[in-house]
Length: 313
Image 1: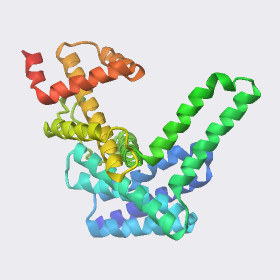
Image 2: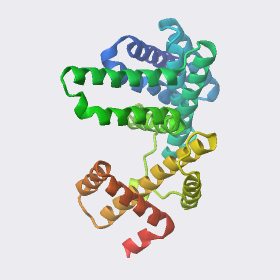
Image 3: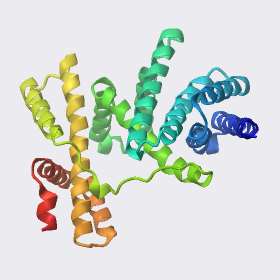
Image 4: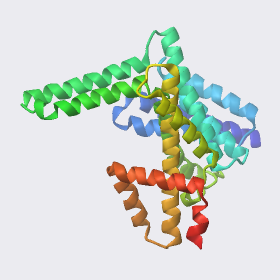
């Protein structure tokens, strides 16, 4: 009876995966929605059954994607299928939600890098260069539209800044961009699919409150070391070491920023302020860069000193 149930559920979930993949490939209007739900069948199946059956289920899903789609469907199926596999199997192993999130994000990042490598190796398609070219073409098209309206001169400097920013992201900050893209995408997948999976009997764990986020104190020392290396580099961004330092600094700044927001949330919760005040503080800090640096200072202070004990007292 258990095997019959497993086979029936596996067949239904594989069919759901195939339908979502078809919609993602051929229905532009709801493509993004279908892509988000590609991990759901894997979460449900991989959280319940032994590993050997999970491998068979994964192979069936890949076969379905190959039969129903095209060559382009396989990378999408592998990317989201492997991510859903990690999510579901971590749930089965009763890992924490944070561990599941980090492991799934790293799997998604590995999948993206693998797809780019195989695209370049076997199809001679440089996805990064094509994306950069598309972004530059979009900027040029916008310039042409404003030029036709007689407004190009008013936005000339802004377009130049946009072109420099796009070039900088793809030439210097590409590793950080890929890492952040993976973590943000998986965060969206977890936020949408886990509540749905829970309705199907998947014992998905809950997040700890954001105010309880405490990063390791060693991060502060790593940030200081990276900052010192950045100051020694001066304006050099051409060498591999310089690019590595710039990417590390960006990642550490984001982590310290999250620590600062966590401290603000803890302070707001301790003082029993309305939740809207914290949300307003986040929005204002994102809109005005001086406030963003202030939040980073709070994060550094929280890592360097036991600030929360002082607030509780």
